[in-house]
Amino acid sequence: MNYIKHLNLMFSVFDQDKRLGPYHIMIYMALFRQWNREGFSNPIMINRETIMAKAKIKSPKTYSKTLKEMDNWGYLKYEQSTSRIYGSTIYMFPTSVFKEQVVPPFYKHINSKNIYTENETFDQDKNFKKDNQPTNPVRSEFTPPPLQHIKIYFNEKRAPELEAEKFFNHYEARNWLNNSFNPITNWKAAARNWIINIPKFNPRKKLQPKNKTTNDKPGNIKLNQTKNYDTPL
Picture (tube, rainbow, N blue to C red):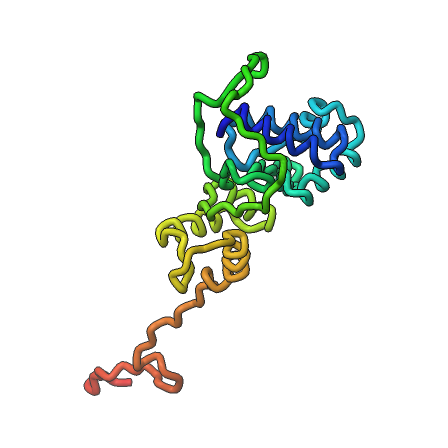
């Protein structure tokens, strides 16, 4: 991830895209600052109040509308949270506009040479070649999700956290191949199937019948077969 080249590319796109307004650019820059602090990893979990404050936006409706528009236009992927505990999730996708960079989702990496503080100044990249024509979106290859994201998804579906760990361990051991030994392309779909089949995986234990002896059969009365007939009645 090249900090300077990415910003130059995005500024060039912003200049050409007539749909964008000040709110779109301010929100993108606020998200980019957080993305930089988190080592350019995907996805990032955001707090609405924090991003609104950095983007100087006061209306939650404007904030939500702007994010959804940027999602529809391919600048990022916005997954709105319905949980009071976890914030919304953002995937920053420069490859949805240009081919020069590939940022696969869920892949955690840190390149210390390309992480800068907000107070630093930068020289222009002399070798940067401008390309003002957007290209078609480039799909990144599937990368297995971390266990924490799976737990969050199972929590949203009100499934036990233990099942999330079972799901992760099961597919991690199979190298994320499905039952047909094909690579999984949508882990959330696989997770939903797993949740649906939880009752099949954990059937209720049936009570085992007690072992019965021949003397326990109905109508079989236990009698003392040893008698002393010399004893008077």
